[in-house]
Image 1: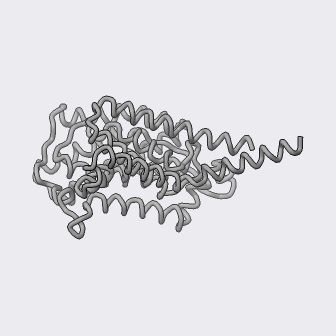
Image 2: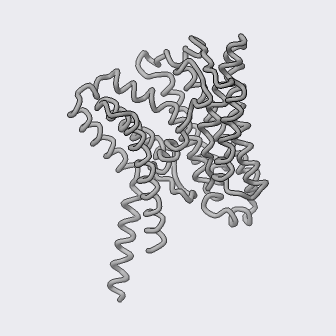
Length: 327
């Protein structure tokens, strides 16, 4: 019995170490997929295509960076896509009135922060899971965008175009640089601030965090505000790329963001994780998306692939959790 128990513990420890090296395996998977994509279609390694991947993951990266903080803290906000649609419509409508671009961008970012704070406030006030609250507010935000625009596309032409048309050092897209700055911002918060330690403490054990003197409710609102801030910046970047806004702008981003975060090693239950893992999760999604596009896979089938990837990432997350509990 002792021998079997020892073997079980060793197996559990090995499994834990295996999953603990998430970043290493993500890099390996990304490289394998990239090599396979290059063999199937040599255009994959063309510089323009590689830069296109970086552009494509910029918006998702910012949303996922904000989601990293929330999910580690044990919270969810699945209304991000709807709030981005509302914010984009508000910004586009303000720009069409002749408002200064910077002021319109700030107002758009504040719209996302306010929406995210509303989710956090209602979750705390009603004592309901943030997942359920944000599920309900999807309709509120989407309806507000529809009411404001009457369903009419809001075109801004060349405004905000400097963001999508600028390359740093004539190579790296400014959109991607902004996204990287978002990840650096989250990394610094999680690893070098007292607020970051509270993110992990609250996510690991909410009650223990409260008993240790941490203001759980106040800090939770800050987490939601930070997520909204990054979603707002993502909206500005997205609008600069699209040049137009609809209430459905940003739809589906929340699920891809959650998938990227979980793929990056953040368990659904929260309490642990890092910004690097999320970035690799976003990059993996970007590589897969580009592979499917180059292979001319039907866009509808691509959505199936993304959904399957999210399901797989959640399943792996629960395997990690159960492995830790069992052994």
